[in-house]
Image (cartoon, rainbow, N blue to C red):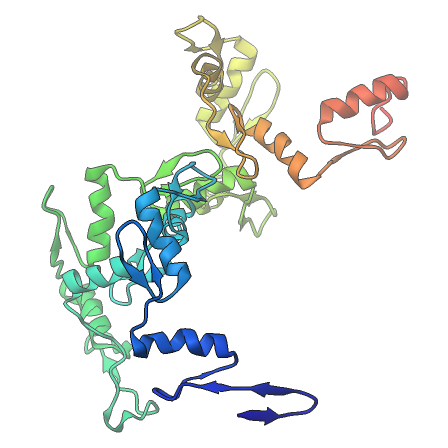
Length: 364
């Protein structure tokens, strides 16, 4: 068969058994093995045969134990690309298969199917009126608040708000929930499961929302802006607290003002010299617990911050940020005298001391 178009012709090869059409005789011949049962590619180890050479190559890995697919995040290897793709979702936190009944999400379609069979007993949404006419979509109205749903199971779930029904009970503590998804999330408080991984520093979280908030410490994103003063915050709670009270806590030593008493108390340690956080390994003391935690990595050699580009690890996030500029090419520090750029502020200072008589970029 030929199709003549404007300046091109494409030959079609049609399967006489099922009518399927191919643009290549080779593809047609390969397809016809479905009908003939021919399996020309045989495994020399176990004798199993396959219709395609690719299937044989994949199968042979069950004998050779070869695992050519590497997860660059954790170093785990897999025999098949599909296994690697499914595994990667553990690190990214992505769960691309949502349940239409309870908003739970899953990494694999098979997990979603098992969940729906076990929890929702095969309920399906999208019921329509007779005749198959999608314009006559069936409507489900809540008798209590008149809210409209296009799915009967969604209405039933919604009505629990009015009835107070909580049919999903935790077998560990007896707490009940309206939705199975909330029960499953609650279980993590007992199992301590933390499926959501930060690929930057390796920290794990029980809930995706916690991971998203945490990741802002790496990206610097501050999505909540104050409409009064324009200040940005990482969390909605911090924004609400920002202007919730006009009470100010002023440092008597330097006049600096704080909106929180605990922040003032912590700040005053600068003036008093108090360092309440002591390292048990070397005796060194610090004003903040965070400084102590960072310092302890000099003893433990812990390196929680991973460069996902080259696999190098760092003890401190600031070192990772500087290192990543090697890959991105970013050089954010500009010399105002000669326009040379640098990856680190310290490199800019040394350059100015050596070539510009110690003059800073702002001419100070």
